[in-house]
Length: 400
Image (cartoon, rainbow, N blue to C red; front, side):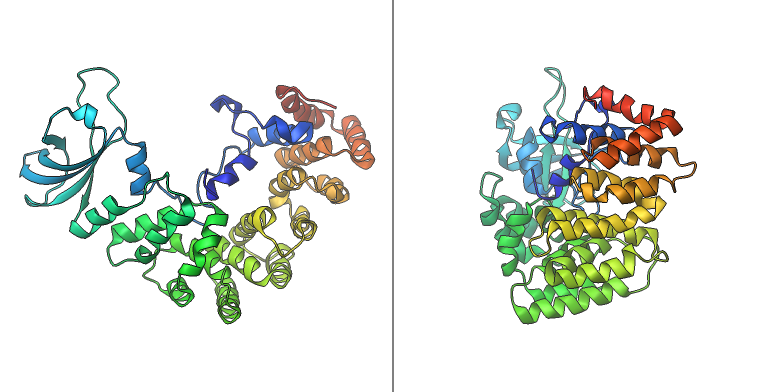
């Protein structure tokens, strides 16, 4: 599982989807999982937290496909095309001795054009036709695909192959190289980031032609600069990008914040606290990006103590619109020092039953005496809220 996908394991899947919380996290985590499953936060984050919807790369599609081949268009028909097979990477047994295949496709190029041909899954019944997916390529992108290291190669050896193709003039190669990095583990990215030109990364961050969904990753990569001069330039640029006025939601902003935290450490955290977390005028979208960046840093960062990151996140308990989200994080991190603020936040929830019950979930997961006393008081004052939290706890076979 890639670094970006690791964020999925921090959140419970809905019981309707057949998943339960990891037992190794204990009763307290199960309380939170149960409450998460009952709210709009339910479900895993299945993409890079600093990227928008990272799809499988071509190499991943090749590994997962029932059939993967390189073909040459030899004849166009009304709704289909005939491709001559040049290289079959996977699934020759499903093709038999066939040298050509007929594919229903919108590919309207002239004969001689090349294409990657994928059958994502084998037919469910014998005799059913193969369902093909077509990716048009040229000689250069076909060679890129055929030379790409397979997934059995260690990532630190695979990723350098894709470095020269980031923001390549061929949009297919530029997007595919980005997807490879988007699916990689953080430690593997950090191990090869020295092979990326920091000057080019900074240029891409301010280039309007670079798709914004890639800039979150480039922001993080810029923050990983090893050279002191590069690191200071990255800090200056990332802070400028963070301060730029924009709409409520801006793609890549969380990556800028994550890169800033990696590069500047405590300096960045103090800035984020003042500019976003403790600032009631900060846009909701920017604050949600900050939460994502702080989750990332709490998991993978090295310079700032975890307790310091937790203290920063606690500031959002004072903002009801974020309290339920950060209550999950604080309980998952076992930040029991947040208990007094959680108790205080419950008194500010008003008619927001979901947030109230999420905060009660934190108290149910907390071993402190003041948490138990608060639950006892709430059981007398609003028994239905405590009962709702305990109901979901019971679904996971745990209880006080």
